[in-house]
Image (cartoon, rainbow, N blue to C red; front, side):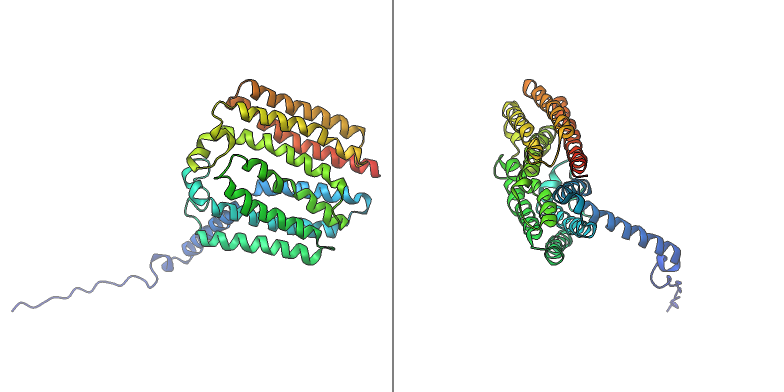
Length: 322
């Protein structure tokens, strides 16, 4: 019989090549942690959250004027940040399958596989509930927490599913979108007053042409995702254009309500009228010719209008008080 020769093969270092190279292991670990942090941050839709917080601050400042409590404002901003972030994360969780079919959203954390759905569900729920509880615990009267809860529930459980049911979803979604200024107002005042109606209506009417412009630009993508946005069913754009014009026209008198209530003066009135007419003109252009180029003009007009008008309201309101 032939002797059997056994060849001894050196064993790889325990733990594989990364264990043999601690520096590489730490580097790749940090990169993975950064990647997950970025993915969680994307779930919160930071740009939308910033606009929400801007309107919250406007509401708080206008409600208090000289008596602004900076600590109370900080508590309000923190709590609202948590609520807004949680609502956005749950929106992405509920729409993850539709997002995977849309080019503009296919690289979001859930359809791209960078986070598991269960992680987004837990993250969004914890932030939303935690933010509402925080506002309830630290702010007087509980009004701000109540408005925040209505905003959160309406956005996640009413507006989000309605996007697949009816083209009226934009109008419904404009309600939770217009409530954040009232969070700031009620946090500062401890009550919900009719004076805050102007703030609500400005943001409410502004949202309709703003989101219709976005929906027209991305109407093919929304159709692939199964969303019944108005521009998806309104193929020639005539109904979309009329709605843009109607809500933009309503926005002009609504923007003057703060001045009627004494929260702003002539500087704000002049600026709001000019900005409103410019925005209105862009919607008339879309009504005449429904095109992507004209929808982009409406979108640019909307992105210029709201920050400018709210900044004017803030500045003129403070001038009136001081």
